[in-house]
Image (cartoon, rainbow over all chains, first blue to last red):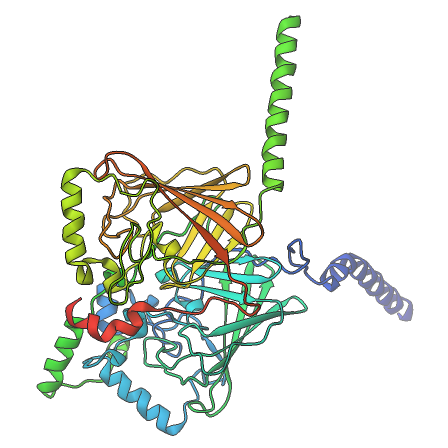
Length: 299
Length: 245
């Protein structure tokens, strides 16, 4: 009886050894870290065309797309509404940590955008303003090119671009403010880290009035990951507006074949906002105010 | 038999030489990278002009002095000049087209790769990608503000062929204009480490009697901390432009 048990134990041990041996190459393989392709300068090669952030994020980084009118215009089915994946990873509730006064102002903007009476009530995107970092990266497709001294990001939308010096130079003077801010990059291992500041306070982080001040600081982390993708993370800090730094993140995939090219996207040259302002002023004069909300679409 | 063998080896040798020549041309292509700027008055008027309020006097950049307009076009040009404060598409902050973008009073940055050359302009964040991969212009006609640029190296000269323009841009504030048949050939030739000779041939059978040329030096910006900033024309003028645009 004992012998029989012993035989069974031996059988199991033998099987175990076979399983272990069989698993070993897999285990060894898994221990080898994935290595990104590199440029001649030895840095991860991020070059090419990328699809930017998840669909709907530029409409609202908290709630996605869309308001009812847009959804109808674009014939959106219910499965394409809302945020298709969470964008804000910290805080865990996925909401922007606005200070109390700022939350009030943001709500006011959600009214104002329905009946705009001044340009500041209209989404900067609809006015073709440069959208800065991080919004440019979830607004649409982008192209990255690298040299020894610069990372260049071209955005198809409104022919926006960023030139990111990699030579360790200091930021421009604090009193110069720009729509796209002033970016400086460096490599931390395989991660491209970009610090951006010198923003103005004219741009929103999405179409939902998610505003910030000229004290905005953004730290972006761009990392090439397995599966021909870039993991993008941006930490956002603005002591005037937010209660604490917060972080959004997403993965962008490669797009385009060998002969893929961006076309000229002349945004401003084709836009007009005077009719929206005229309509907004009429509505406000008639006492018609309403909150921009996605309530109806979930019914 | 022997003849065909000779032919084969001759043609093989020729192709090898060609491949070699092309790779040498690429390997020896001058490096045009840097931040550059034109220093002249062409943005106001590419022809000779006296000074007026806000406009510095300047000598023309057009070879031979005058632009060879067809008679009707000269009348149009004079009308444009009269109405320039509003008729110039730059008055509403549109993209300036080529070559006007080159001599706007703002810096631009050239970034160079084997398969493309990027030119990034400070003025209303215009960008151009000049494809250097031997590809053709896309089929058209396409109404681009900045046209479609395909380039090649001829010795030390970057030659850029640009077509697919709209007819809304001018060459300057003085009303010098073109139609959508505009065909621009730009030649960028380095002249020492800090200068580029910029030569542009303009062809437009709808407007001119013959092709004509303008030329000017481009200067490397020397400040050690120089970088492109922003000139977001329409963002600054939006309040005014929203009234009538």
